[in-house]
Every structure is written in C-alpha cells, then in structure tokens.
Length: 247
Image (cartoon, rainbow, N blue to C red; front, side):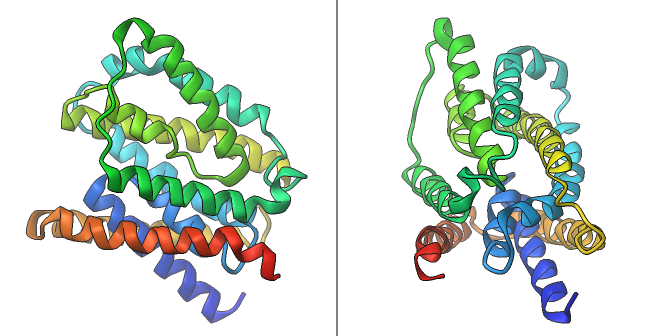
C-alpha cells in the first residue's frame, strides 16, 4: 500500500462526500469512477461500501417520512435486490471484463440526464410496475459497476416527491443498494487485508467532504457547482469508457 494510493483514496472520497453534501448523491459515482483509474472496479466498490452505507443511513434518517417512503418504494427496492443478486459475479466475470467501459457509459448517462434536467412524470396507475422495472435495471447496473444512480435517481425525481422527501428517499434507496451490493462483494472474495484498511480512511474522508459540502451548499449557488461537477464527470466517463481500448 503506497502513500500515493492512500492520498488518491482520501481525495476521491473527500470530493465524492463534498458532492453528496451539496446535491445529496454522487458518492459511488465519483469515488468508484476515480479509483477505477488505478484499480479494478470490484476493489473500488469494496472500498466504497462502508462510507456509502454510513453516509446514506444518516441521510435516510432525516425527514421523518421513512415509513411512508418505504411503503411507496418497496417494489423498486425489491426489484433492486433482484437485479443486483441476479448479476452476482458480473463485476469480476465475463461482463466485468469491460466493467470500466460500462461504468464510463453509466457515468456519462448520469451526467447528461442530470444536466438536461429532464422533467419526467410517472402515471400513478403504472407506478408499481414501473418502479419494479427501474429497480431491476438499476440493480443489474449496480451488480456490474457498483454504481446505483441510473435510472433510479431520475426516476425518483419524476415521482414528484417534495425536496425533503426526495433526499430521504434517495438515502433509503442507497442504503438498500449498498447492502445488496455488499452481498455480491462478499461472495466475490475481493475484500482482502490489502483493501480493508482503506475503508475507514474512505469513511473519514467522505464524512469530512460531506460536512464541507453541506456548508458550501448554504454559501454558493448550487448551479455553479452543478455545472462544473457534471462537466468534469462527463469527461471522466468518456475516459473510463475508452480506457480498456488503450490497455
């Protein structure tokens, strides 16, 4: 374990936590996206589990509507688990051979969809089946890349939840996503003595970044940060997409 690796992990999770503190999500996307430049996505996802789980539990418990949201989102959560566990082994297996490229495409899609600020709506009569399908698709991408924002985040925005409830709903979904992914990671056997010490470092860095992100959210226009963040994320996604072609 080198000093440069420790610094990269700390910087990646501090930046990811900072983004999460401002917009409420983005920790897995940024942290895994950056770490995938120097390690397999499976190892990056293993390091991400602890900080993701802790920060999202905190987010999930804010807002006072957890029971109501769990009742509303349960088909999506069930679909998420089905999709994630159906893809067990994909990250390090045949599908994972080009996992970095898949991750890059997901990151690009995430950036484009968020930049477009698409105003989607979901008919209430179709909400349960749509939630189940979105959950399964997100779960499959979760199993392949360790990133669980597409298409879940745009879909939850389309449900028309009030701002506080939306942030709490994202926290609930991310907690379940992280727990489901943890089962896959544990089964893969990639968690080792070499990666475990990095998780506490990642947690501390993410929490520090999240704190300063929350402070910054009160002092700077979110749109200013949002534009720079999403533009940089898109460039990173393009690089990750084509990286395997040059290795």
